[in-house]
Image 1 (cartoon, rainbow, N blue to C red):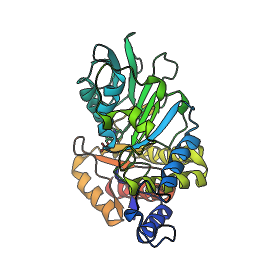
Image 2 (image 1 turned 90 degrees about the horizontal axis):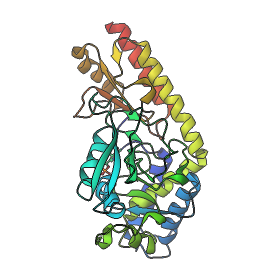
Image 3 (image 1 turned 180 degrees about the horizontal axis):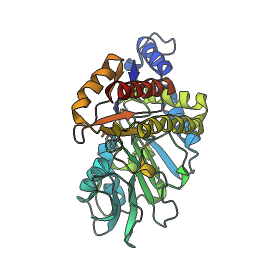
Image 4 (image 1 turned 120 degrees about the vertical axis):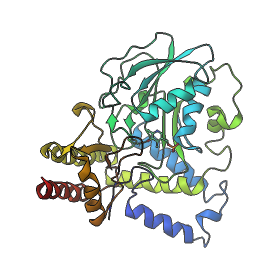
Length: 355
Ligand SMILES: *Cc1c(COP(=O)(O)O)cnc(C)c1O
């Protein structure tokens, strides 16, 4: 089986095996990971190691705090402005796809959103080439990879003099960036880092405490920092599977190695796509996502036959998002190059047989 699901998505087989074993017997205790307290000497090291591994793999700055929170990345759409955007101030957002549009909608509830750059008019097929940032903006928000539209910021504007806030849900741990220079990074785990149910938040603590509103305890990053990401019961099993995935990334060679593999997989896929006139990639070449490749077929009547051929060959998760149609191939860290090879040869064969 080749698993191209967009999210929740493929995890390394070794991670799944260890996770399954921990459900039956966690570290030889005779207890399941599901039935131990989160403040016990058994679970606390899990949380500590997971937070530390994020620090190490991403080479964070000491002022950056690592949290594992509930509510998915969608909760961060509101939690970010609630904590960082005073009600009489502005925030700059880029509008590059479905996910950034959702973030913008929530930020509008807390302050004024200025759109610094948008590709909405062209149907979200590119990353804006230039940005116009309001000098009063408190931060700039980017969605580094648009999971549905298949566009990715290949060059992140790091030289700006305002804090950068990034939704990295679908390209976290797949590319090396100067993570220590971001104001805030968030990512739902279920694309590239673990199972659904937990959210990674990295926040520079110097940005906190400036909002002029009362923040509910569960929404206040400072409360979570104070309690070392154990303000209430964390999603213990999800955090454990994230820890196993982080260990796997480290063993494989860290983010540098993930990036190398991801470039190789994406190159193979897009080279094949470009060589076959039957298929069509709508995204501007320079902005194509290394994680989620979207494509259509010039003859839409062939689409269902192609999908059937993929399914018959054991390839799953290829159908495009319901909002954009066509096809989408997700090539997250755990997807082996062999899966991309199998798919690209199927595409080549299909084009020969139906061309
Ligand atoms: C999936 C996704 C989200 C939403 O994540 P949830 O955990 O479902 O809330 C947000 N942003 C991006 C870029 C995503 O890919």
